[in-house]
Every structure is written in structure tokens, then in C-alpha cells.
Length: 223
Image (cartoon, rainbow, N blue to C red):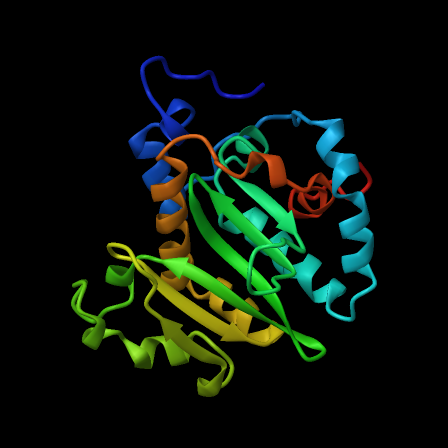
């Protein structure tokens, strides 16, 4: 059974209290998720053609492998919160030509792009999780740590999107993306940013949720 909603709260706090969220953030516990998923057949069929198109791309296998990791490790109770508190888009029409984009509230969380036959990723995180002194000083980004998160130093770069305490980490190559997600400090940073925005309220991108991709994220490809 899924966790009951908590009256008078918003966002992810309806399902997980602060301590449960912190335990998940630190990797101390995996909260019990829902057994069943809610679904919109209209959305499933609306984006089925885009999934088929993505599957014909040479990057398809790598994309599916990465979003499985992201769904498993970076989103708390993903079945319980699917579409309403996070969503995944397939070949979104927004600028940038992303293959896949994951959103929560009004915020982009993670995107994958073609990079030749390989892929590259954009992780949005809190700047303070990647500075040497936990400050918001862009000049104190921990470049040495970022380089340790990837296979080759040239596989990582950064951007500074508009907004308070927002930092973009660009990672090139399937192997480096996997290493980034397997680095404990980097993974905690991804989780922390996702918690921030899942707690801000309902997902504004519900209408672009692609169930065909979510099946793979949630380990339900035979759905």
C-alpha cells in the first residue's frame, strides 16, 4: 500500500516527513513506494510515437540505461509521485533538442542530449553543493571534485543558470554520466535539488509526461 497523505502539507511532504526525506537523501533508507501506478491512457498514446522515434536513435540504449539509474536513485517514491510531482518528456519541443527531459514543479531537473553516437547530460543542482565552502560564490566551484566525478576531466563543464543557488553540471559520455551518478557526494547533490523542487508543489509539466519512458525509469518496460 502507498503511504497516506499528510493533511495540511504540500509537495513531497504529503508522503514523506522531513526525517524520511533526509534518510533517503543520505542513502540511509529507501522509503516504501506505491505498489501500483496511476495512469493516463491519453498521455500514453499521445507520446507513443515519440518513444518509437527515440528507440530508432543510436543513443536509445544508453538513454534507457541512464534514465533507469536516475529513476531508481534520484527520485524518492517515484511510483507514488509519478506525473503529479515529477515527469519525463520524450523528444521535447523546447529549445535544445533534448532526447529526454525530467522536470518537477516549474523546474528542469535533468536532460539528456545526443553527442554524436554517444550522449551528454545536464544536471541542475544547488551551487552550494559544489563550492569548496558551501557558498554561492561562482568563483569557488570545486573543479577538482567535479573532475573526479567523471572518467576524463574534459568530460565535465558547468553553467550558471539564472536563479538563486542553481548550478548546471554538463557531463559528456555514457561512462562519465554513470560515474557521476555513482559518486556519493554528486548523487546527494542531485537528490537534494530534486527534493527542493518536488516539495514546491505540483508538477507544471504533467501534460508532457511520457509513460513509455517512465515504464523504463520505473522498471516496468512490459507495461
